[in-house]
Image (tube, rainbow, N blue to C red):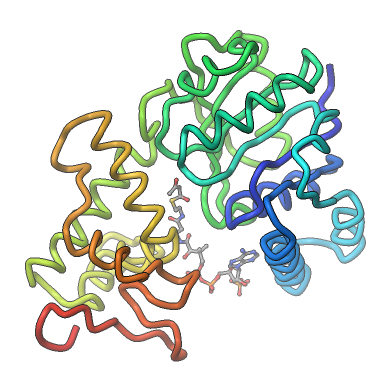
Length: 298
Ligand code: CAA
């Protein structure tokens, strides 16, 4: 069965980016989140992102208008019942995700594929909560979704070859490059990226270098587009800690444990760019390194 209608659970940074990519690729798309304010934030983020792409000549104005017309928003899970594929991008909480999957499992047709954008949870733990474990995959996108070309397509023990092929083809139809990963926490990218990011926070904590120099070193020394501390702010420090906790739980290796500095920052409400405070203070333009109680100016 061809995919025509796409459902997206969650309209935060990742969910809205996925909904944007789906609508731009020609799919009728519905994004669901718990309340109007978060849907409105998602909608305005999509319009802003599309506006930038039009300005840069990367998207025709007519295609932007058509994509916008294909996109709708809802607070009701039941409104996703006639979708051919549903991509979940809600917070990294297995119970929450499984409650949503079970609700949808009861109302979606048999052919509907369930796909999770989880960064670190096991796909098997979601598939097993449904009666369609063979039609369950991981589709892991990267932030910012409209610009990052990669999707990890994740096969778990129960994923049928047909479901995997359909999900892989769907990822490619969004204009993305797909790679195949087995269902291990972190897949390919986060398995390698998360310890690197945590090590950058550890280096700052140990006073090895300042925030700006740590970032500059990796940008100029290794050609990274963003330094690791800037990248953590970009992903969201609360999200980084959640991913690290899940990976540490799974692997029990110190390199996946969130350092105390990062934990303290999240407790103090430093969530990164999304709320204006992280390793950098975004209340000024350009952002400046935050004073994090480490002694001395960072
Ligand atoms: N939508 C549309 N256009 C956007 C955009 C968006 N959301 N964000 C940025 N842009 C555009 C800008 O307008 C700009 O356009 P021009 O170059 O034509 O002027 C262009 O993209 C570049 O933006 P900036 O100048 O602001 O910044 P930049 O050159 O540093 O590029 C970036 C931004 C693409 C994000 C780049 O810094 C980058 O690739 N950073 C690394 C991102 C990364 O590693 N992402 C993965 C995170 S890990 C993850 O997502 C998985 C997980 O599970 C945690």
